Image (cartoon, rainbow, N blue to C red; front, side, top):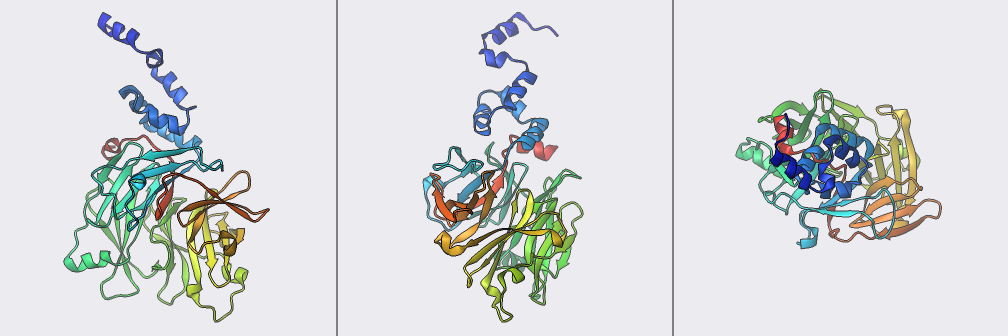
Length: 388
C-alpha cells in the first residue's frame, strides 16, 4: 500500500536515523554497547519494538558478556543512592569502573526486605518478605509481574517465616521459567516439601517431599547452570552434597562436592562448622568456593565436565589473610588478563595471583549491605512474556 502524502511528509520530517528501514536499524543495534541500547529504548516506539523482539534478544545474549547487578540487602541502612539496582560491567578491571548504570525498580515493589532469588535471560525473580510475594522483574524495562500468592494455612505460613530456600530457573526444552520453593515439613526436621510454580500459570504445585535439603548455613538461593538449580544440601545423616534440580523434568539429582577435605588436610576431629561452601558459576561452569576459617584458606573449584566428579578442578587458592576482612563473600569472575574479581563484604576487589596483591575497585552507589547476581540485560516486555 502506497503512503499518503501526509505520511510521506511525516516520514521526511523525521531525523535521518529514524528514517532507516527496521532491518538496518537492528543491524546497527547489534553493534551498540548495552549502556547505549538502554538509552535507545527511550527514543521512540519503533526502536523499543525492535529492541524487544525475541530474536534480537537471542542475538543479544549470544554476543553480550554478563554484567553484575547489585542492590541493597534487606536490613541495610536506608540510602537513596542504593535504591534500585546498579548494573556494573566487570569485563575490564579499572578503578573506578567505566560502566555503571542505575536502574530503578517497579514502584509497586517495596525497596526494603527484597531479595533476588535468581536471574535468567535478563529476568529476575525477587521475593518481598513483608508481603510474602514473589515477582518476576525486568530491571531494564522497570516492569514487574506479581506471581500467584501461596495458599497457606496459618500453620503453613509459619513454615515460610522460617529459613526458606528458593530458586529461579529456565528450561530451554519447554521454554518455561519456574520458581522452586522449599518448605520445612511440619513436625519433620529432616524433610522439606518442594513447591514449583511455572511462570504464567496460576498454581503452585507440590512435587512431594525430599530428604536432602539445602543447609541453613549456606546460601539459600539456588544457582542456575546447565538447566539445573543447585544448592549445597545435607542428608538426614549429616553428610553434605550438592542438590541439583532439573528444571525441565522437576527431578532431583545429587552431585558430590570437590575433594576439599583432602586438599585442606583437615584433621579427623575437625568441626564441620569451620567449613563454608558457596556455589556459583565461573567461566560457564558450576563452581564451589570452600573456606576454612581455622586455616584462613579459600579454594575455588570448577566442575569442568558437568556431572562428572573427576572433573572437579582447583582453579584458585587464596589465603584469607590477604583479603584483610572476615566478610569475604565469593569469587565473581576470572578476567581475561588473569585477575580474580571478589566481592568482599560491600567492596569489589581485584586479586592478582602472581603478585598475591589485592586492590579495591571503586563503584559509586554500592550500599553497605549488598546482594548481587550475574545478569545479561534483556528488553523483552513482561506482557509479551506472559501472554506468549
